[in-house]
Length: 295
Length: 194
Image (cartoon, rainbow over all chains, first blue to last red; front, side, top):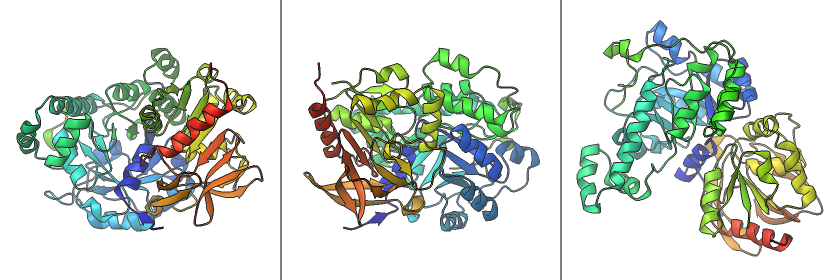
């Protein structure tokens, strides 16, 4: 029998296996082990978490393969890593390392201000950020197997992730209310391929899973995103920039399973210690925003 | 017929969708008491370490073990078959095994995600079935009571022992209906449904 690898089904399939879970940013094997112990479904291997990238500035690039390999050795769950937008050679390197998922991420400094990576050329699945439906569908057309909100990474402030998730869901509902002969103009307006616009209008959802990211710092934040329609959450700086990372990580994992159970959420949220200090996104200058990267 | 899908983490919605298209409206199980009245349970794909932790924290371990004594049919895919196994090839306390199936499994045994694959299987009593394997476990040892219903390159990939059915692949992802139908037949034949 023919054996096919790197197919869209295997790529989206892994994204489906991550549903109802938490993907945690880690910068070393010790943190990766804590994340796994807490019940993370995957870890994102990084050199610096977004809050530190924001603070330190400079060009943010793919992590050193040495760090990524050590993290891959430390845990049995899938390992993700980030590449700069458009930097397909960083992606080739991550694929050669055997990374399980690649995040073409606005958190790193973009390498191309016009083109994203042609993700169909890879056997490894990609996740990409989006602020609205058009952006999500353009990334899916390029081969993304998973979409996440961009939010505003490294701020510990959920407001932008909420904005992006609400907008995507609203635009999906609007497409569902359109007549078939109106979808051509919708595709033009959204700047997205017609077939994908038609899929969303028919099914009322994206053709790939839709996760939340960017600013999640508490179990309540995670549950909020789940109630708004996210199928999983990414937590970046929110865990290892908090006072008690293991306890907080465990609590966020439980909050994603019991997101619809306020009593349980009340129990889970008790006594977690200080959350990461947050940033008021409206006080950030336009050039300090990460979410405007990507096209 | 009261069928549950363990909904702690993973692709439980995909399983629920297949069951719905076979005319069964499943219960999404997240609490121990929901296991008491089930005629059958599906354990989905996902991360076995995450599911293990939630099973332990939420008090689901004992009621899940009781399913074996009560003879309640269970169907697990990928992470699900890992939890149903007697043991792991490399013992690991991050992952719980319930011993519904007398098999030993090795986690992520085909490699990393880039080695995940699609193929077509010949399933006993059914015929050709499309299958997707994602960071799949490998069944490395099979007890005498276990019936192998499908193989891939010599490895058992679909096995049955009494009311328990396990697949190392994901019929819910393709999706195909035949394997879930086989499970529902097991449920119908194994207990009187009042």
